[in-house]
Amino acid sequence: MNKEAGIAEKLWSRNFVMLILLNFAMFMGFQILMPILPVYARALGGGETSAGLVVGIFTISAVVVRPFIGRALDVFGRKKIFLIGFIFFCLFSLSYTTASTVLVLLLLRFFHGFGWGTTSTTANTVASDIIPRSRLGEGMGYFGLTSTLAMAIAPALGLYMIQQSTFEGVFIFSAAAFLVAMGLSLGIRYPTVQPQPGKGHLFEKTAFRPATIVLFLTMSYGSIVTFIALYAQQQGIANIGPFFTVYALALMISRPLFGRLSDRKGLKVVVLPGLVGVICALLLLSFAKSLPLFLLAGFLYGVSFGAAMPALQAMSVRQVPPHRRGAASATYSTGFDLGIGLGSISLGSVAQAVGYSRMYLWAILPILVALVILILPYNLFSKFIHKTHKEE
Image 1 (tube, helix red, strand yellow):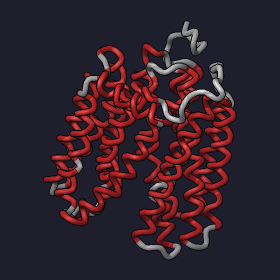
Image 2 (cartoon, rainbow, N blue to C red; image 1 turned 45 degrees about the vertical axis):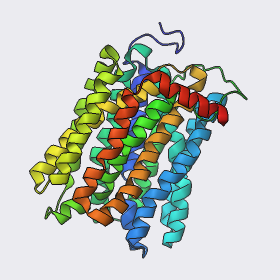
Image 3 (cartoon, rainbow, N blue to C red; image 1 turned 120 degrees about the vertical axis):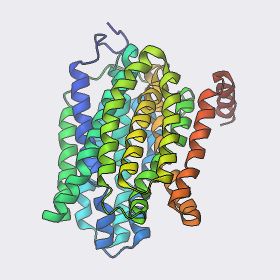
Image 4 (cartoon, rainbow, N blue to C red; image 1 turned 30 degrees about the horizontal axis):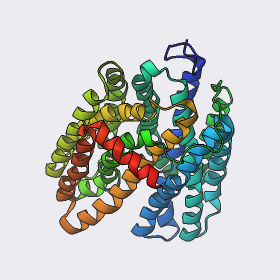
């Protein structure tokens, strides 16, 4: 029996099944909006810049709110914060129907990011509460698998829905998915965590190392989700949709497999080859001129990214006491979001200067930094973090 969590030392508990179903519903509601809102911004009279801001401004507000939500989770508990986040997300999903201008849409999108930052941070924290320590990497792999499955289904569903009906139907679907997730959240038996009011920083210093690694790793991911379609068009490939399908399938294979391996053999055993695999995938992308090469790069990137992610997520919470798991999850998620945002912006500037092909070569640089941080002796990194934390 795991005394800390109050559940048996098995992975597939009732709580865990409820949580992964909740996470799937949540990501369906989130991912269905991703390809739709840029199109909606154009329909309201916006240009390419506005379409990009619809994605970027959401990420900014999610990053801003995460550390405060992490602290609130540790002080007020998981269930209340979860419910507030679900209600907030639902309301703002429906509010898009009232947007009459791009400016109003961007304002709504900014506040919507608070709801996403709240629910996703809470879900990660609850996962770290209920997954047994001995199977944390494996459990995080299966937990993340549901978000990958949603990513493979929801964007295509959203595009089909706007072709068959209207934007409003997508917004209603998004809100309904989060209502389902909220209903599932009420059925979870949350472990009792003793709150520690007035103690601790907004960020958890023991999670800084995996958060920093994932920041540099997701910079490359930001360049892929933002520019791969434009790069493919430039190479004469009209439909790059299969790239995302292959990528999602590779993630689904690698996440649980390598998550289990990280529990047995250690984190570096999977993170190190994962980072090297991402470098190889980016090299392939930089030379890709045909759909088969794009698909090969997508598969390699998915396997490698899926190998590193569960291990890094497990690393961020493994040594953290229960009353600091909210802060640790927020620290890790902030690194993830920042990497996507910084990658989209910085590598977009590189693409404008040297083209998409060379941009993917430049995208290797952040991965090399992540490798150095991973290989760096832990004592050196922790001393640096301890020093900067004291200066705060």
